[in-house]
Image (cartoon, rainbow, N blue to C red):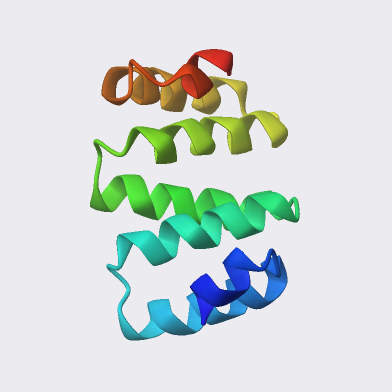
Length: 102
């Protein structure tokens, strides 16, 4: 159901369903990542930070998650953490133009 709501851009509903799914399977990376996307869309940066942090804990080579985590840290005025996350993003997704845009 989380993906259904995410695809319909129903961000709050998506977050609720991803939370439910993650209670059942807390190591499902795509649910964490998608929850982060939905949270970022509604500017719930603390939820997004938690979600993306969990993604990179589970898969440290996930460049998109590092990039999104850097963007969230920038919104939260955590510049040092943003730079660190961005360095990891570049390390793992050097060819992605969106990362260089940050």
